[in-house]
Amino acid sequence: MRFFFFALLTAGLANPALADGYRRFEGHGGPIRGLSISPDGQHALTASFDNSIGYWSLEDDTARPVWLEAHEAAANVATFLPDGNHALSAGDDFDLILWSLDDGKPITTLEGHKGKVLDLSITTDGKLAASAGWDGAIGLWNLETREPIAMLKGHRAPVQAVRFSADGAYLYSASSDGTIRRWTVADHAFDRVEVSHGFGVNRLVINDKAGWFAYGALDGGVRIVNIDTGKEIADITSGRQPVLALVLSRDGNRIAIGDGEGFIHVVDTQTWRTIKDFRAVPRGPVWALAFGPKAQHIMAGTILDHADFWPVEGAASVSEADGPIRDFHRDPATMTNGERQFARKCSICHTLDGISGRRAGPTLHRIFGRKAGTLDGYQYSDALLGINLVWNDISLDKLFDLGPDHYTPGSKMPMQRIVKQEDRRDLIDYLRIATDGDDPQPGEKTE
Image (tube, rainbow, N blue to C red; front, side, top):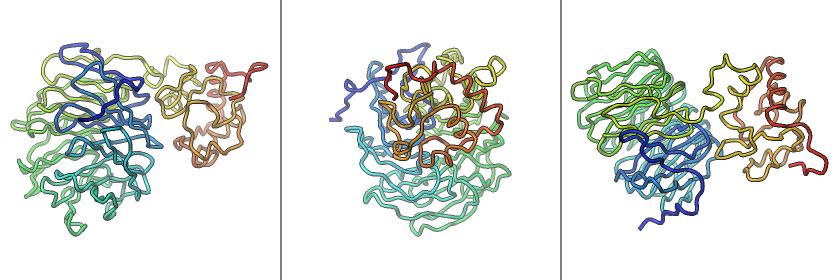
């Protein structure tokens, strides 16, 4: 029997229904980038920008999630193995992590990519896994021996999606280079180009039983292609771009599309007619989707910090998903320039109120005068733990002028710069006020 230690864990609950059949899964400290529902339909995985994986009960509204913590950067994807007792995840740290869901502990880390990993696929027997890397490579992994098999190369740009055929004989990959390619798994070899699209291809699903695959692209296009002939069967493009999520129901009768404009579009694959098309988030993208076991619900990961569980049929409104307004959701016209810089560059990872929560970065409360890497309760990278740096006007200006990759190399902070000096100055002025952050008070310990 699975040892599921909800009671020992803090933060996160699946809220009771807020509308007919609607639920919300709260506890993450960043956008949800990946979703998966277990083979038995009783649990879900959420992969988040906050570096963590949430393991949730879909049966018990009062159960707290188990947090799977090992990634050192944003977690982009997490998927169940066919046995339902293990999971595989991947992220911006370039790594794949195999998990035991009996105790929430990592079993092993699979290394080999030289760029972030955005997608995973596992064969139906659970023996092989494939990974899509921004290094332009497709990783092929043996999950029984927990060793790499090969790195498949041929795409001329980042690989965005991978999918095995049902029998495991072929692997399909979609790339920003606009192509979908097929590979033979047995000999790890390129087989043929399936699609050459004018824009990058972001998402891919395969319906072997019906003999077609579907892909979603940067231009908003969603097309259905016959596997054998390569001919287009249907075009279910909604006109919204880019396509960021694409998922097929288990029975193959429904397909759902999530886009950069916050909509979820559900289509009947027998008639190619729309079942439901609705706005799921007021502003920002829908990153991930997963159908419930009977396709009566669709789980969505968006720019918000929680996952939504929507009824596919019946009324739906974006108001059902209303939650706390994060800084990066606000209208830029209502902010000062310093606030805008914080919202765009900092707010997705950092808070200002003294509580880091489940965020990718530590709180910035009282940051001025604080030595880098010393805030209690946050797990810093080794690079920042060993640095002799105090945060002040000068060091913060250099951080955003040079970029973290040059000023604090090896730290978790993603690469970004604020080029204009006036923007850096306004951000620092805003932080000094918003973080209540003059120098430490007399007698106060510097963190």
